[in-house]
Length: 239
Image (cartoon, rainbow, N blue to C red; front, side, top):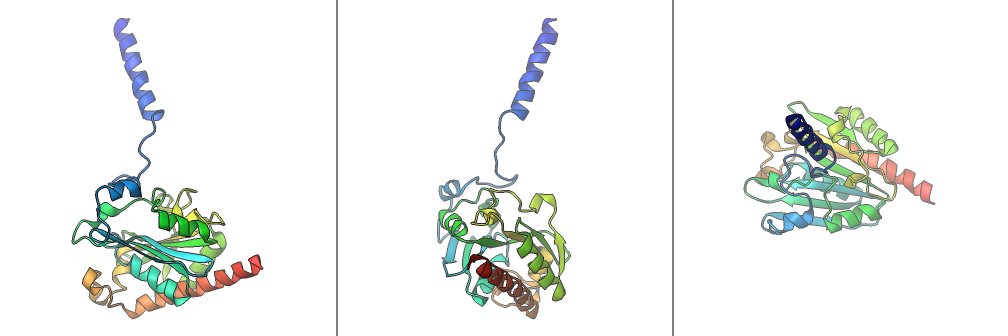
C-alpha cells in the first residue's frame, strides 16, 4: 500500500512537472532566449552587427538571422529594400565561426530597434534561411494577400514555392513578422541550395557574398514586383 502510494505520488509529481511547469519558450538549440541575454555574452561590432534604416514606406524588410547566422538572407533583404525604398533591418553574425550561437527564434527576437520598426510598419517581410538540397522557397506568415502576390511573382520567374510546414509557418502572434499594424506579415524560408545559388561558385562565405549571380537579381526582382504591388494596395486602402 505504502509502495503504491509512493509510486502514485511520484508519478503525479512527474506529470505536474511535465505538463504544468512551463518549459523554456526558446527554440531547441538556441543559446539565448532574448536579446538581453545575448547582450550579456556577445559584443556588438565584434560578434554581431545591427544595420537598419527607417524609410517612408508601409513595409519593412528584415533579416534577423543575417550575416553568418543564415548566409544570404542579409543580402536579399538589403537589396530588396533598396530597390523600392523600404525600411530594412539586419541583425548579422560576424564571428569567424559559430555564428549559429547568435540565433534567437522569431517569437523571442526582441531587439528594441527591430521590434519598434516592425510595430510602426503596416506589414513586414522577413527573410530566413532553411536547410535543403533543392532550391525552394517556403512561404509563411499571416498576410494572405501579400503571400499570394509573392507566390505569383516568384513562380512567374521560375522559382519553386511551397507553403511552409508547421514548424516554420510564421503564424504565431509573437513572431516579429506579425508584430505590425496589420498583425500579419510574410515569412520566407530559403533553402541552403537556393541561397548558395545566389553567389558566384556556390560560395556563400563572407568574402564572396558581394559576388552575386544573375539568379540573385531575378529573385530580388520577383520580390520587388510583389512588394511594390502590395504597397500600392496598402496606399489605396489607407487613402
